[in-house]
Length: 180
Image 1 (cartoon, rainbow, N blue to C red):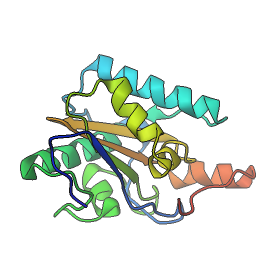
Image 2: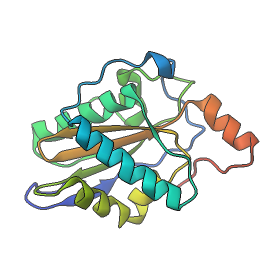
Image 3: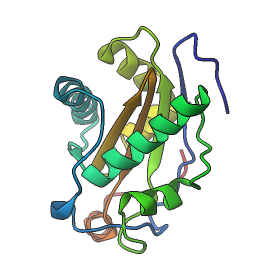
């Protein structure tokens, strides 16, 4: 799916079952991120996401450097082709997760939200995602970690979790994954 760059637009990525495998490294060993988002923008996005999750009774998301790098790489790609897209020559979401450092078999495949935020403030951009059921489903999923990227006006969020943490949720009776 592609959209012109001249207006705000959002698109949701392929949702993947939490049981699908993806790459990882220990969360404590995440690489330094290369996001051009300012710390204020990151804090504001994370705060808005976690406020919305709290309203739904969900655990707050935490920043993950590997997901930050994956989301940033996808925003960079979209800027390079000047088109919003979930397609990427580096592969599907799982393959892009591997490239960012997630270890196959230890992490689930990320979920992805993309948007063009031309002239949008962070709260306005987030409201676009909150007003879209598929995007909100990704935001309110049982994932535990988030990565954010921005290149020009192209924004990307990636959501994923280590399978061991998802399995703990399943053991506690919390529904994980599924199609949205």
